[in-house]
Length: 279
Image (cartoon, rainbow, N blue to C red; front, side):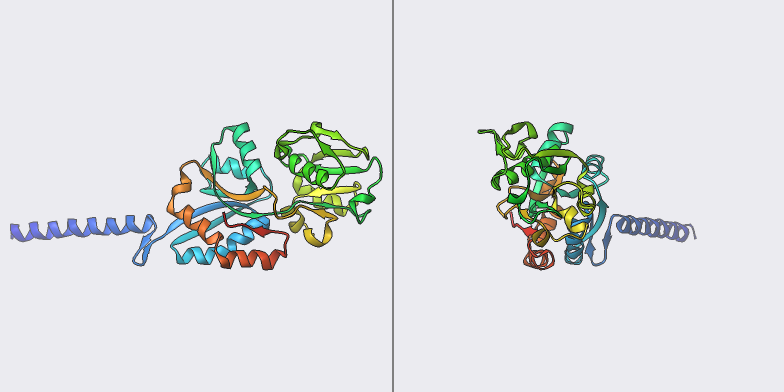
């Protein structure tokens, strides 16, 4: 009888241990079908979150459960990545990332470039940049990281000249050395407010980032009076904490975003307002 009781007790312990093991297996994201990895990505609503939504079912087939957290500004996504609320973010271009790393010491790295959003100049009063009058009021973002980009576009269009020998991606208003039309620059607005400012008819011209333009119902290709070309160095990237770029889930995310299916989706949906890259 004692031997029988001992055997039953031993079997009970084995059963309990096995049950605990199954519970731990479920909580760690594994299943009978294989292992699933959860990725939480912070993204601007347009076009970044839309692109990620398109990639979501493809990633699901590859064992990645993608959760998308949307943001409407350029500050919080990096803060959330730093505090590990996010595994990665998708909203910024390389010069902005470099500026944020320098200012806040984030140490984030580029896991892969996904697309370019050509920045555009919009006007309700003039159909061409050459029509802008002397002393025209030019409204632009208060993000210094965007100023080099905006000023380079104006220089390319022949409206200003920047100081020789500078890195134009880092140019500031103080680097304008020639301004024959005496354009008045107003850089006191959050980037996300610029579409509404344009729609209100403020200023003579408004320089708007394409993600905010699209989100505001504008078509950067059709509605702008000037726009960057596809050679722009401002590639929007997947940004991660240093070392995480080597994680398989992050590599798979970038591979899927570089896939023909996603690139075709970008080209078809945004009609040139967003241009895919594969590096």
